[in-house]
Image (cartoon, rainbow, N blue to C red; front, side, top):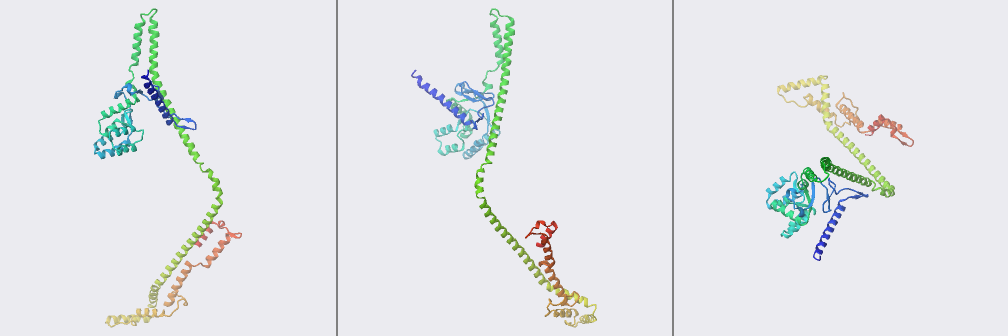
Length: 469
């Protein structure tokens, strides 16, 4: 009895440790919010209680058992498809450093549509780090594993095989040994480990019963065939239908629970989102306390900015107007020489057909030119006309001469100059008619001591805007 006491204490401590782990796992995976418990821990089949009275998530076609006691074969283990993007990125670095690109490509092709592995043939991150320390791996190699993978990551045997360049058979056996040493309760394929042929067993029981019961007293045909046979048929049908109905009900119950959990979490998120909309309501009183000072400072800033903007617009308008005046005056100065020549030519064309003297001088000049004699400016009617026209402009004040489009050259130039001045006044100066029109429009907008331009009609407003610009 004394020899059994330490073993008993170890057994009770192991049971207590498992119970604490189960309680911690259920409390960490359950989400409690506003006293609502969500069925997060569970499977399609509800809660599955093993023969060791340890709760595991119920799954369709899955049986849970202790690997050390069950000693399962590889085909008895439940498998699933595992997504391994993190492991592939880490494997790429390792294989490039070790020059094993072919192994990486083969594993990538295998895991392209999901890596199919047995769910409980693995070692954890902590176990792998301990093994690397025992086998003399450097701190940098162990840190690479520790900082890359989370603490709850499971390295299945195909991953260990390609990572450490070992055969899958060896890594499979090693992982199973680790799980058996820890008395791991893992998943088994129920279709592979369950007893087959329940209908055969039922009717074998019926046949054996008939053979035995026929030797009993008061046994008759009615009881053997009608009562016992009908009861066995009903029990067989009940067994088959119970499996189908129970599987369907558990699946629907699980889906309904998941739907409820999703609705509850969605409702919680909506409530939190709505509460966030009122997070700054308490600051309204603070904002209202400084509203007057903030408004006054902003209004003064706005007025200063508005005056500055109006000053800038006015400066731009004045600058553009001065540039237009400068361009106009420069054009008038450059066009004066051309104007003198054009007007002189026009006056010659008008005088030549009318004056006999010019015609005779032109004929005499032509005869001298044909005879080869030299011709002076006085002999040429064109040259003499232009020379006399240019001399007539010397010392003449064009501003005092009355312009005449058909008169002498000074009168013609004065006429063109006065036309340019009239155009300049109309373009760049406010005329009396425009000033009178502005006064008329302003009288229409008169409202008490000030002006209300909203009273103007659309046509009057557009005209006032045109006069302003």
